[in-house]
Length: 487
Ligand SMILES: [Fe+2]
Image 1: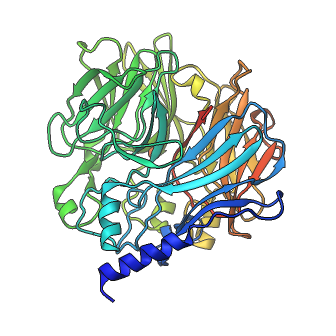
Image 2 (image 1 turned 120 degrees about the vertical axis):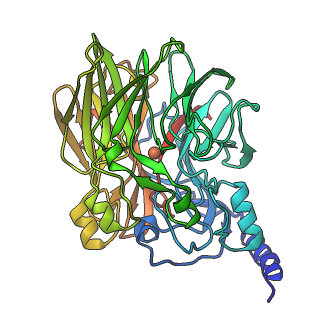
């Protein structure tokens, strides 16, 4: 059968798979929509178990709930992550894989779930051809994060422009801030909850200056732009923000055209270059940024940063170097931990302190405390012994709640065979304290091959979730998600 003919027949088969039916019992989940795509299997360790992609797009209402959903939870939690539609000939985790959004909707105690691929231009080409197109260099997978700002919901990938989606997770198209943004936008912008401003950056491989910092107002109009000189094009995955500073860690992961041409990860680790801390004055763009050099280390993510007196505190997840190979052995030898950098703003003396030695990633906090003195942070704990035994990376059997003031922590342990991901903190609309709210995450159950969505009380972090939404489907491991109120 010719490919085009096959595609047409596949599309027809997919169309007929769309079903809308009521099940007899209201206690059963109702599949409002179901669309199945051609499945495949891979021996790549990042495409198995919890990380294996799903091949169905579904909408399921009337989900089974254990416990009680808090009344004030009105809105949606949505999370992004890689979910390659076509079998890849090679797979570089965590860079590649078509973005898929997973949304959990809360409406007066009723809970529904929906997942959708982000219909990027690259994915459209591949759907037309019915296979992976390896020649698509620098494909924008839109797979890393999803944020709500102004009237936009944006799926983000740091080497491409954002893709706008609607609250039904349907793709609208690329968003370039009305032609104000070129090329790309970080997947980790920061929203100042007081001003409503969106702070972000883009890095460039080809044009100097290689780094640009932007501020957009609450209507997504870019109102400030600052080019920042850095010596080489480097990958910068996240930024930190305080009342007066924007902070970049320029780690020596340097873009290499040779490696890009050879189809490998297009970056080279240059240990001898060290890591440079860049402090940008948020309010005075005429002032030159401060560049502080230190020994090389790598970070993907910041937990938070804040200022007191003449000190800057920056909490982040530290790696000795970047994980250079996309395999689980490499991941196990490149473990990360929570670290604090304290900078004296007068003398520029830097002091690093390990706040914990456990392997953690994907740190989050109550966003109302972003950039301010804070007490609590949340991370999945990655059990490397378990991952090693099962030969599956990123197995997180528990969440950690760090108390950074008292230097203590609490553990929320999932049931045996259950693994969580990044936690989101949903601030309570009623409360004033940092612990007033809910900690939520998807939890994959390897015994049932389905996922739950759990709602944990931050004040009773070690206790059972106050509510669990049971999905009849699996949500693969992913990256970043956010809560959006009053959808
Ligand atoms: Fe990230």
